[in-house]
Amino acid sequence: MVQPMGVLETQNTSNNSINNKQMQVDVTVVLPAINEADIIDQTVDTISRELKTYGCTYEIILAEDGSTDGTDKKAAELSENFPNIRHIHGEKRLGRGRALKNSFKQSNGNILIYMDVDLATDIKYLNQLIDAVTIEDYQLATGSRRLSQSKAKRTFTRNIASKVYNSMVRFFLRSNIKDHQCGFKAFQRETVLPLLDEVEANHWFWDTEIIIRAQRKGYKIKEIPVEWRGTRETKVKLFSDSFDMARQVLALWRRLNF
Image 1 (cartoon, helix red, strand yellow):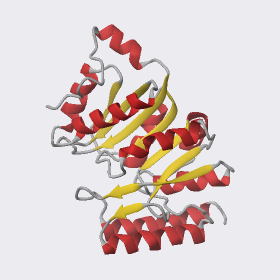
Image 2 (spheres, rainbow, N blue to C red):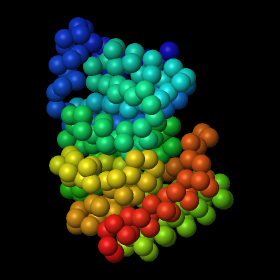
Image 3 (cartoon, helix red, strand yellow):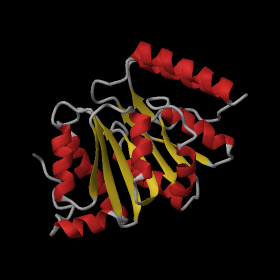
């Protein structure tokens, strides 16, 4: 097992660990994870190093559910060994949206962030994400693969599907955001917590719905150009998930009475 190398302090006693995990911190990073045993250690290490350069207090929550490849055991070991790593386990797969909702409600951070565990979005943009909601006072910041300054590597088919989907969201839900689904977002705590129970989506559509609901409340949202690379086989099923998300766009349009 690859341990985070010198970035996280190992716990001294179980009591200290418990107390540390209940303390308020500057930043919470949530990593939704299912069957990610081959990368979860290195991902935690990479994020920890980046947060340490930022100079903030932090916790990383491993929101793991339904794993069958040993991810649960690795996440539990990380949580046991390092006081600022927490493991929230579910026996059944909850879906990304529900996992994020559960984790955010149990978090201790003033800034709540989530990102894809494969770090498809280059981690070097994490500081910009944090600055947007701390220094610039945006309520929500999101990475965007569709800005002119962004660099995104994806297949032709998935690029077309993304363009069609985001155009549909912009048209039907009157959004001014170019990329609703990038798994690289930050929220001010006092902003996102009241929204969690309003969002009905439990899986991929969660990203879009929380942006739309935030816009309707007048929250300031910043899109950050990023470098993004689909480094692994995606868990998104292109045709079935695209159809389902299009259906959810129309359903949200009806519910919000546009």
